[in-house]
Length: 412
Image (tube, rainbow, N blue to C red):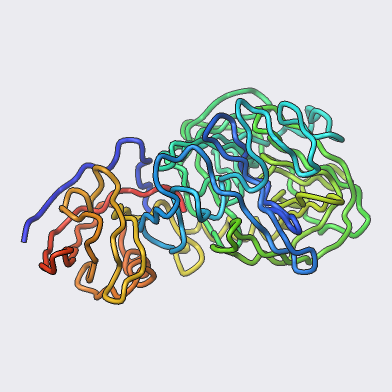
C-alpha cells in the first residue's frame, strides 16, 4: 500500500472548521457576470406544484456527466447536466452582465418594472460574487448582513459550488472576502463570514409575518451588475411550496412555507431582501417565474433566521452542514460492483493515488462502497485533511489501495 499526501487545489477556500422557476419558476440566486458565469434563479416548471427547474452552468471545461464526489451529496455536476442546487443559472444566461430576467425582458441585467434601490433599501445588503473553480465559471447574487461582525445570510444556491466568494457592501462599496460558515441545502439557506469587516450596519429584519395583499419590494443584484435594484408588488399568497430541480428534472429539492409575490424578482436577486410595507425585511428572495404572469417566492425571514442561528451554533446533521466538504475528486457513474470512475480532478487526491477512468472504487476508510450514492454517504463522514484509505479495482481486474489526504471541496 502506498501513502500519498497531496496539497489541496490552490483555488479552494480553507476549511474554517467545519432563485428557481415555477412553470417556469427559477431560483433567483446567482446571476452570470461574464462568459461562463451563471444566473441563479430557481425555476419551477409546474404551476400547480411549483416545480422548479435550473439551467446548468456554461463555460465548463469538464464533461456534463462529471460528478465530483466531494462529500455530502450525490447528483452534483461540475459540467452541464445536473445542478449544485444553486449558484448557477437558474433563470437566464448573461455575458458581460446582460441577460434575461424572469419577466423575459432585461437590458444590462435590469428587468422592466424595476428601479434603483434607495439608500435605505441598501442598508445591510450585500452583492455576492462567486468563482466556481471546477467549472471555470462565475456567478453573482445577493445577501443580508445578520451581525455587525460580518455574518451574511443568503441562499445556499448562491454559493453552492463556489471555490471563492467575494462580498461587496452595497452602501459603501467596501469589498471583503468571505468563507462559508455552513449551509442547509434542503432549505436553501447559507451563512457566510466576512474577513476583516467589523462594525457593519445590519439589515432591518421584521419581527412580524407577511400578510396577503401587503405591499412588498424585492431588492437585489438583478442581472449581476453590482448595483441593487428594487421590484415592487404585493404578497399574493402565503405558505407556498415549490420543487426546485435542474432542466433534466434531477437534483430536485422541495421548498415549503414560501411567500408568493407578483413583484418581478429577477436573476441575481436570490439571497436579497423582500421588504414589507413598513420597510423591514419579511423574506429572502429565492425564486421567480420564467414565463406568463410573474410569481416570485421568498423564504420567510423568521424561517431563514432560525436556520441561520442553527448554522452559527455549530449544528451539523443530515440537513445542516458546517464549513466545506471533503474532496476526493472523481467523476462517477453507477456500477454493479461499486462506484465506477469516469474521470478524476487533475491534481486531486484520487488523481494522486493513481485512480483513473475505468477503475471502480470499492471501499473508502474501510467502509464498502457499492454504488455512487453509497460513496457519497461514506464521504460525508470525513472532513478536509482527513487521511483515508481508498481501495479500487482497475480495468484489468487488479485490486489496489492507497492512503490519501482529502482536499477541501467547494461549498455545497
